[in-house]
Every structure is written in C-alpha cells, then in structure tokens.
Image 1 (cartoon, helix red, strand yellow):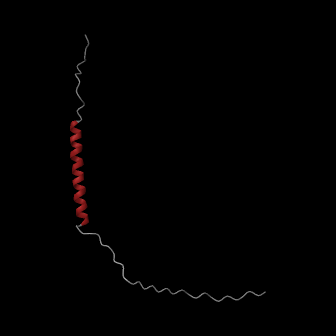
Image 2 (image 1 turned 135 degrees about the vertical axis):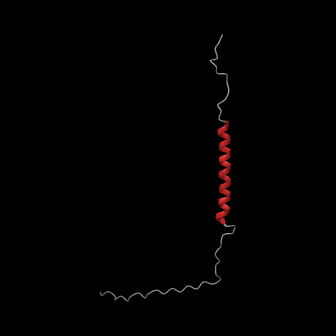
Image 3 (image 1 turned 90 degrees about the vertical axis):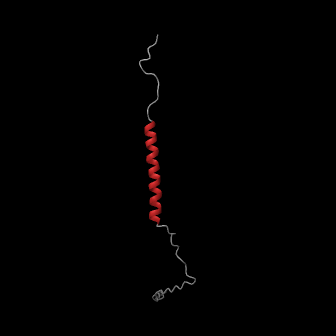
Length: 71
C-alpha cells in the first residue's frame, strides 16, 4: 500500500491573480486612451505654412586691404 500523504492533486490557486491582472491592465488601457484624447484637445496639430517668397538680405563686412609683400 502506498500513502499519498494527503496531497490529492489540484493546481496552485493563481486564478484570482490572473483575473486581477486582467482588470488592472484593462483599467490602465482605458486611462491611457482617456488621457490621450484629453491632452490632444480634439484638434489636429498645426502645420506651419511656408511663404511663397522669401527675401533674405545678407550684409557682410568688407575685408581690410592688405599691403603687398616687398620682394
């Protein structure tokens, strides 16, 4: 005769933790979606417009005249 020692099989009991993890994960996703829409304010981002003509005026100082070297 073999003695089973009172351990008659059965699993761990981690089913409650899995359910809790799914609930917490779902709540995090919902909060992230709500935050995205609230921070976005429902508006499209502004795209800067480029003018048709660009006028650039650059004034460079004149280089000083140098004396020619004596030979």
